[in-house]
Length: 322
Ligand SMILES: Nc1nc2c(c(=O)[nH]1)N[C@H]1C(S)=C(S)[C@@H](COP(=O)(O)O)O[C@H]1N2
Ligand SMILES: [Mo]
Image: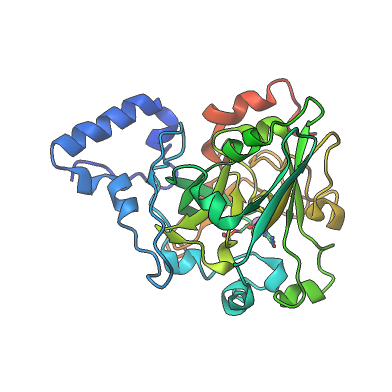
């Protein structure tokens, strides 16, 4: 076999090789008829569940959008979830999220912008070409997955709203409906789920508005009909089942920060050097690799996206701004 499978602790090709070079290497392999051996081709053949409508995406050209790690199986990615609106156990969302109705669905874009609007989900699906992007997702709890998402950059939608100079942050609100979401009856979080990004983070091309995964529309438990995916931040910043996007002047307070201020800072960039108050963040467990002999992976700075997003935080103390 031509391609060495990296040991879990080896740096990934995407981290040590400029993207243009490994992309070239990949097309060279494809020309040799070795495309099937490339992790990318592998990813594109990773099957979905087969029960949901197809939602294909063209391979993304955004720098850093295609990590070469082996994707997590669809079965794991759609059954081990955090979606507290459906319960706090990892198995709760897959078990209970079938009650979520994803049509009709609208998303309002409002606040500090010249062109606020209400978008129907079917209009959003047609707003821009769908791209497939393979991202690492790391939960603050210490586990990670690799998921082929389908969607487009959030910035595409945000730009249409023409944010004003006062729009320093973007606040995201997700659905909180007791009738459809049994977890909302509990007081575990202050509903609705609210998250926030700085405007430049929200506009970064890697910040994804996702509608699908594994070539199919999102299963409800993964945040249907649309969610955020911010790959360099802990998973909780990636709000599911979005209903409102608001441009604001002041830093929004997220539901997690309200629940435990010392544990969940506003930035929440993946940083192995900033331990969670109750555990280290130096390593992580990749879901699907939890065999007896599998080792933990070292957590990567910015979850491995430092080359793409490090500049956003130039001059900031990343221990203070955790
Ligand atoms: N609305 C909503 N979004 C949410 C959550 C949630 O509880 N509610 N959990 C977050 C957390 S903690 C993580 S790790 C990711 C998990 O995404 P996944 O289940 O698709 O892997 O979703 C995030 N988005
Ligand atoms: Mo998480």
